[in-house]
Length: 161
Ligand SMILES: Nc1ncnc2c1ncn2[C@@H]1O[C@H](COP(=O)(O)OP(=O)(O)O)[C@@H](O)[C@H]1O
Ligand SMILES: [Mg+2]
Image 1 (cartoon, rainbow, N blue to C red):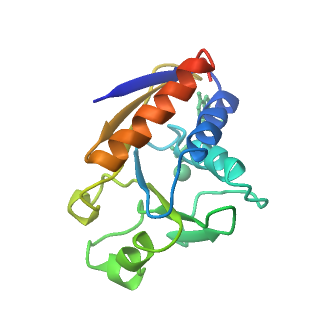
Image 2: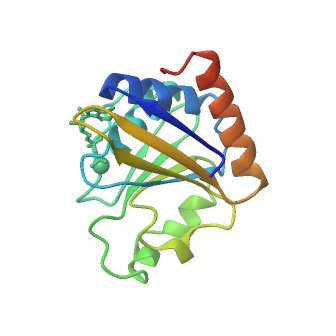
């Protein structure tokens, strides 16, 4: 783990997501782990706002993938209902990750072998009704840079995002 931060409200989690968006580049992959209700979709909502997406972000649980046009396209995956890794091909998962947008994958830890070598894993843990801890685990040089920039911005905000 290279960093962690905490939030005490959904709004604060969305602000953290918005802050991450500033540093995202085409091809970046962020995998989100954490139980139902942890706040994965809230974080993605903040990322979407930061990318200038002007439609609401909901969990793509039934669609598995929703594409939101923004400053960069946001590829929002939710693998909760995916049963087999092979189904990722039907979703165009691998092609999409290599596309010109940024991919954020809820339940991204379910099929770890399917993730690209360099991705940022964010694990969200519930500490109380509104308290959440976010742990960042980069797996390559690009995701390490992303994690550093994001943590730097949150620290500058006194995160408390
Ligand atoms: N600190 C927090 N961060 C994110 N969500 C929070 C927080 N505190 C309370 N919540 C609530 O928890 C729920 C998180 O839902 P959601 O983001 O859909 O979770 P997930 O996608 O991980 O299943 C929302 O109802 C949100 O309002
Ligand atoms: Mg969700």
